[in-house]
Image 1 (cartoon, rainbow, N blue to C red):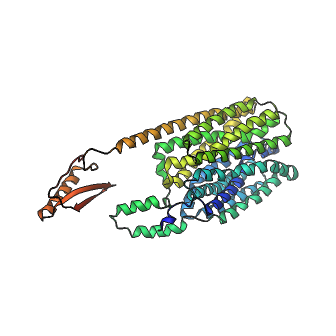
Image 2 (spheres, rainbow, N blue to C red):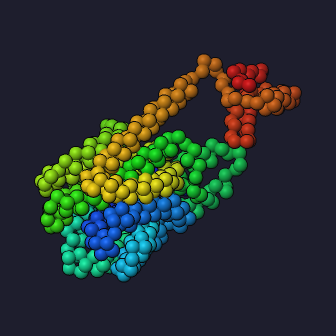
Image 3 (spheres, helix red, strand yellow):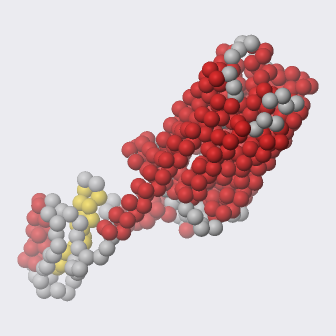
Length: 495
């Protein structure tokens, strides 16, 4: 396999893939973010409580996350293109069937389950393929791709409001489902980066001699192909577990503000036309936050995990202040602060995940992270709805979201401390020893076999020296080399 196939292009057709991912983000997550416009309509139509109606969004978010490991596995077995097309068809089906609006359970199954599965099968491969196409510019590419949801949400706010006023909430769902079919078009244009290299890499593996570990290791490091099987063992890594806990707490909070922002504005007596503009403001500043943070992260001035922790802290502060608004202007200002810092968070949280686990485990980590994070998305909106019902005020939901985000920032700090400790430990272990020959730890019986081998060479008159020992799993490979020295010397063997 040629070297040029072994490294991400960091440009070229990769920017086309970024544009396609930009579109997919807009046609999936942007729809989910602006679904709050349907909240009051559906609640009034079925005459249900806020906590009952919020289960639609909760199921969508939960299935969105739960389907991520399945989507990641399918990407490995087939291609990102195939999975995105499947996601587009599922998203359309969810909205089209939701048009019938038979009862609340029907809405759970269609606009909840099917829509969530469609979003998962579209979003996961789209964000994954961008990370494969870029390395040095990964933070910027991810930020641009993720900004699609902001750009589309900016337009979808007033557009969905107009659709509801003209065709009713059921007709609006059907039209939105038709628009989501464009996800399939984006999927068709997502050219697989590594699929053509996979067969070549597999063929190359069969030609490597069993003992040629150096060639095997070098190939694995350079190949862009990830593990063919899904790696569930990441849950044993403390770094990944800490980041997953952060994801759970963050997901409990992230979807609460868009869900209750519209009802809060109604409770303040703000006109419906102005209410829709709040979602547009939220999307606009979110868009700016993503691009600005992506550009800054690409400069590598500050560690991405530090950027993320600061952004989470500022988001929680904004959510705590937002309920203090008592008119449209103050609500728009606090919404803008929240949207900007939310954008900075989304722009880099996938990049931080890649930094935590490495690209060799990224596909598996992304699926697992989304799966574990789903518990937060599943619990967050209903919990906030329950608190709103108990308090009788939509402000209570924002207070809950802000408090949970403060807690999530603590886990990022612990993760950063753990990573720094491991880095310091690795530097200590890699300090050179004073002796000329160093060897890894050997069992006594392995040492006896090595000495016996050396003595056999010396018995036939061949001077040898033991120059290296490499242990790999259950098998130990001993490297002996004929050199022009008359004696055999072994030093610093750790028994």
